[in-house]
Image (cartoon, rainbow over all chains, first blue to last red):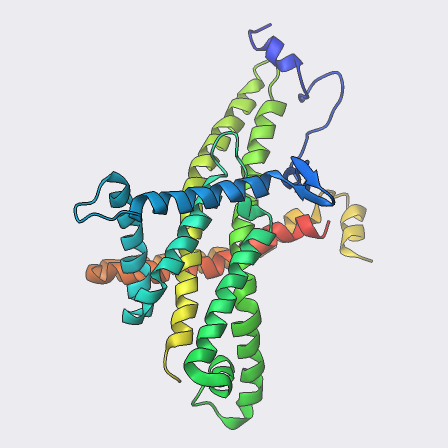
Length: 270
Length: 79
């Protein structure tokens, strides 16, 4: 009998007499009991987290840039680093000089998505908001409206559709096929993949962390076999560290693709 | 005879979603390998073009990666 015995007797474990199975994580890991309900509207944890993220992003940039000084204070310095990262690293490189107008939009998207993703590893929150599909879809719809509007504004109605669907310099018999493919690609699949990419990454990452955390509790027994539980715990910690990288990368890629679509809408005809 | 029945008949049991993910990971695996391999080669040849190469590397990486992620997620949805 080791010191782990009392720990290994509570809950569900691999060789326990109650014969309970492994509590495998599934879609039920993403459903929450509502915190409170107004009529048929349920206010759940992801909504609360999304609101907190919004307050953090707005509050931070308010604190940083409400009273800008020539010699920046601490908050303004951090804010300026973030803003410069988007404006130099993404907007100027991808869109060019015309992109300066869209830097605030891109900065808001980047920091909102990033903070939403970071919620995945913050204790007590521990849920990536974007792993509920509606949140990335809402942001992707915003991006879709932006670049569709810019396309029609830059090229006019007919020119806009031509810009979205036709490639120049093709043999005539290929044009009907290309129109279908380009329409699907530019109008339907773009926002869909934009949303799915963020959602699936956060979904898979959260699933992995839940999986290894649940397994390290389940494998805990009062024997040498609890080494497996230790291994599982190390993997859970490693996955958490890996998620930090993925979260940043996904926010970056989301912003990069947004600016790519905007630059596509702004560029002159083919 | 469906695939699931055939598997059961030969004594193999388990979740087909796992097999599906295994298959779905092949293509993106090759793709991501190519993306990073060629980007590193390009960076080594032309270190001064590093920022633009890195940007396009992550773009290509994201476009490949989403296929593998779809393979991971689809079995959970069509359970």
